[in-house]
Length: 158
Image 1 (cartoon, rainbow, N blue to C red):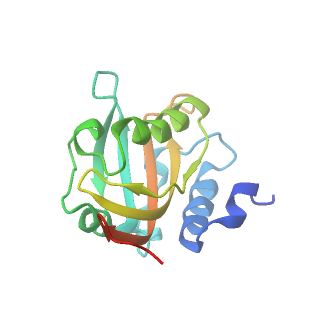
Image 2 (cartoon, rainbow, N blue to C red):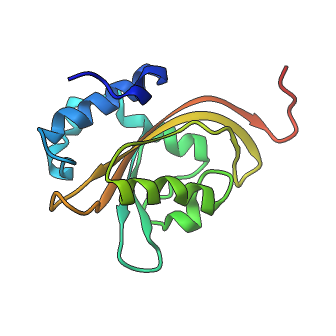
């Protein structure tokens, strides 16, 4: 089976994460969280996160954040609602990615440069991948981010 079109322009780490997720699907729409084995992807672990999809007003809650992800954010938001600890331009822009994964039950790529809530400009590439315990409903989102650039507010790029 050939790669999906969106993957052609992706960073190698994004491709690796996608191929791992795709392999773990084993022909299903989405893999289960229990299908994933961190020991199989040790080089990716610092850049990943897991977000629970919850049936209350929080909607999305950080379950696990890799060390690089926590360093980039300046904190570890594990256990917090995404709306209270997001890393991006706005909670609405962050929700667009999670909502799309839950709605489509398919991978989503985010490449939009943005200004973070702590006033840094970032250029990044993130893949959001659905996980499902029942094979039908997304109950967790796995993501991996590759940061290309993070600049303080007001820094002029040439």
